[in-house]
Amino acid sequence: MGKKVKNKDIAARLGLSGTLVSLVLNNKADQHGIKKETQERVIAAARQMGYFNAASEKGETSAPVEERPGIIGMVVPSMNDPFIYEITPYLQKAFASIGLGFSVFTRDPDDLRFNRLITSLKKFFSGMILLGSAADDSVVRALNRDSYPLVLLEKCIKRMRLNTVCTDRIAGATIMTDHLISLGLRNLVIISGEDTASYDKEMLEELKAATKKSKGFDSVHFAVGKLPKAGEKFDFAQIENFLRPPHRSDAIIVINSPLVFPLYLALQEKNIRIPQDVALVSMEDGIGFDLLTTPVTRLRKPLSAMSLKVANIIWSEVKNQGKSKYKRQVNMTPELVIRSSCGSYLK
Image (cartoon, rainbow, N blue to C red; front, side, top):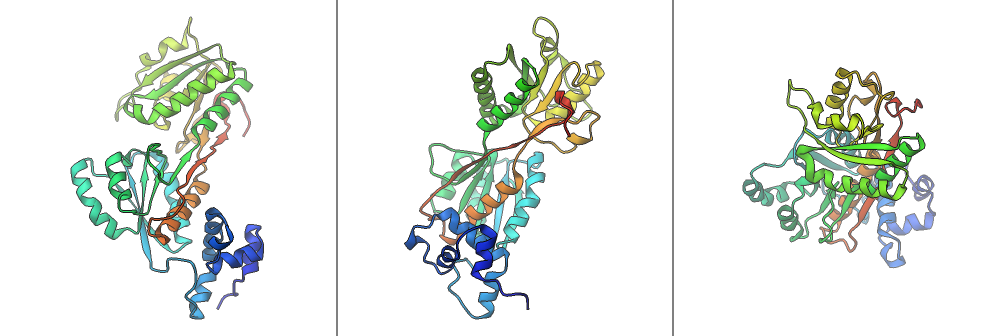
């Protein structure tokens, strides 16, 4: 039998008082006005440290947790997004630490057929995460109407009161534009994807606002790039005008990570050097960015922190049968990963 986990051990890990931890673990937190977020931190840490396993062995049943095993499902629009592959291991670890299973599946492109499946999915999954465009109004309303445990990931529906965990786009746009200004780059071309216009819209708006607010850029142009199919090349004509006078840009900001590789190769074929002739940065992280001859500067989402936040929120919703008093809208600041593609040779 392992070492018994005590209240003071949990308190020490979280930097909280032993009294507060005791109140949470004895179902007295609400009576003393302890924040829901703090309660979730305490219970998640207790679960991870094996506190409830010890309580179960002693026959105690007062632990403030949903002891019935369950599975959380994450609905994604497709499996082509690198973000899904990056965050899935972190989500699996976060849910495993609180005793929940985790499964990922794609949304059926036939909306009517998918909507009919919702009733069955609700019976199979204890709660669901809807990623990006998988969280459309009809699905969200169908799940939210019955107080089903639900969290939206990288999607915010402002007219509905829902739990959401998103990357802070405003902070990301400011971080990237401030960095480019610090390098003396004054002429930008911002490229978004032709097939991802709705997804890119919010980030484009934030970049427009950030560039105007900074007043440090001489020119900012916008272009739309089509992601080439297998065996095809990036259509360089889409941005060529912005890389020569009178619109010569000294930095390219790419909104979607999948566009970075074909654009990178197209610039190489045209003998346009990165970063000597033009800097190249991405608003999203991508698999293999550090393996390129010139590694790419980009924003990286806080995957571990996002996963823990999602797990804690949805676990709280499961425990409260989807009727938690508070709905949280969490925005998390991305990290700037600086590489040589922007002209800064920091590693």
